[in-house]
Image (cartoon, rainbow over all chains, first blue to last red):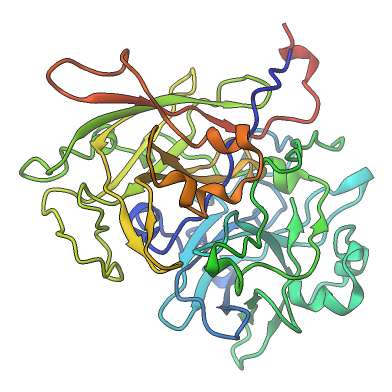
Length: 192
Length: 236
């Protein structure tokens, strides 16, 4: 039987000094050895309600490999794991509120009711001022499968662009994606 | 694959809202638009797994990371990590950070005029064992002032970061000490409306953990989200 007293422990903010505890696992390069030709860079900034850069934010990434397989026992798909690929990243923003990481574009993974999800990264955002972390996702602008993604289709069409990393630089493998906490282009966050 | 079983949603009031105006920093950082409901998929029921290779045995003792002993009251912090369905959460990574006994963090942006301690970093980590138990040896952190409101002081606290088995079970929280007179005035502690849930954040003094001539013991059990439906094979 479930004990009704077992309420989940409330979340509390990471505060401004989380680097002391969380810098020892700082991963801004998720690319497995031997896959460097497929590497992409995703870079952006975290901006607050005044449009000011958030210099004390932490971005965490969770993603499948290029075949759409998670390194986790509950992923029972018959797809290969990639050597040296955990699919986890963690980056603190710098003095300009910027973050930047290298990874590979994941494959599609199963979604609800037998559908396939469009390629995406799951993102957690932590910072002083956030009593609990924010959850969002990064999708890719060159994906036609975005049209059929169950979750994207739940998002108001006018806000969907906030979830999509876009090519903005001359470099082919570089994408921009920002986290806007409030205002006109406020990023879509999920009740996860 | 069939659709995975999701994790339970928090009961109203048992987790803080994003906007809590008494906590000034939340005003410009909390989202203003409604969150979009995310039905858990394979993405959310999986998550990063850390193991022995990520943690050294000595990482759990914050009092033995330098040549000398840190100043302050030595304490043992121990407890069990379990989920809402009363199952232990084994082999999960716990990362911990805190101020020193004087209430000062070893951080370039901490401007509090209190001394640093050359023998104290304030960082530890450990994996829970097969029963979900963990144990740290550290120093009782000091209270410190902050600029949230006039004469604002944070109660003594230790930050905890946990992963649990899935992306959806991620938790960062803070542990407080019993009887701290600052608790009723702290907006971060009070941001959780439900009293029972809020009080989960306060550790308890524990004679069983207290070791003679060495250290006082505090017990801090943590509860991560549980699965929506209890799988049959586990309900023995």
